[in-house]
Amino acid sequence: MTTTGSIKKRSTTSATISTTPFPVSNDEIDQMINAVADTKPHDPSWIKEAHHHLSRAWVRAVMGQPYKKDKTKRRPFDYSKKKLMDYLEWRQKTNITHKIAHHINQGDDNTEYQALNAGSKDCYWYGTDKEGSPVLWYRADATEFRKCNIANMKEYTYLVIQGAIDHMPDTLHSINFVILFDQFDLVGALGKPALAPNFIKGFMKICPDRLKRAYFVTGNIGHMFLKIANSIAPKSIMDKVVEYKSREAAARALVEDGVVCNEHHVPDFMGGESYVHDQKIVSNYAAMMTNISNDMRAMIKE
Image (cartoon, rainbow, N blue to C red):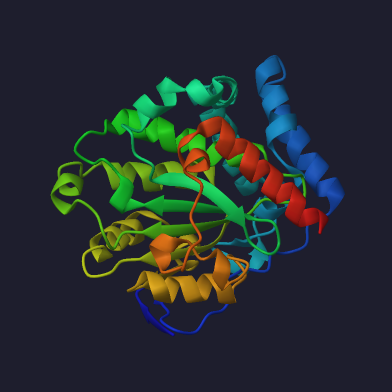
């Protein structure tokens, strides 16, 4: 394995990328959730968000990470509290709880969702790893760069990412991310220079301390977007990103890491023989949320 800056490259060998957090007691988790809720004692919606959308597994992960100023110590209480409060502020500002419910309730005829992504079928959840953590897929070759509206695409990705997180069982908090930037409309992408930075910043806002590992396929033309990510995202995120030059190499790593259960579940667009991602799940928001919720719960029960 070689590295360039904080970006790892791995071609044929594979290893789980993870950080072992410091221990956090159940009492400390209770104290943190209550402290966040109590910052706005006269705001019922804030209190509800704090108690319903700060999962114990995630709060434990946030509190248990090494402090960036001294890796031998756990994050200070107030540092972790600010992270959680920033996240809840974002939830309130975007009204994401209501929007997720709205789009799920639209069912199969969700033209609003289709309008947001300009017909792209590029960002979706499909499957879980061997521990039940869901897998987020992004396919730049499926992005309608020339048609998409940046504000709409931002809301679209918020809905997709946060929707699955809100459906996580209490014992889960982390996600896997497969990013395919080896084939895409280069001219169209360059015409939307704010799209990639907006996505990265949104991901950081929604998913602090949630990324388990990311598989970034760059091919011959996608490295520029990995460089953008490296210039924006902190080292704690980029240390979990591994670059691959081909989809086949990334597919081997996905199988070896248990992100894809076996070679028969490698999708056709990554060199698999016949496994195809169900287009209804890929393009239908309600179906996607139902499917990933069921997959997560089924895996952790095994």
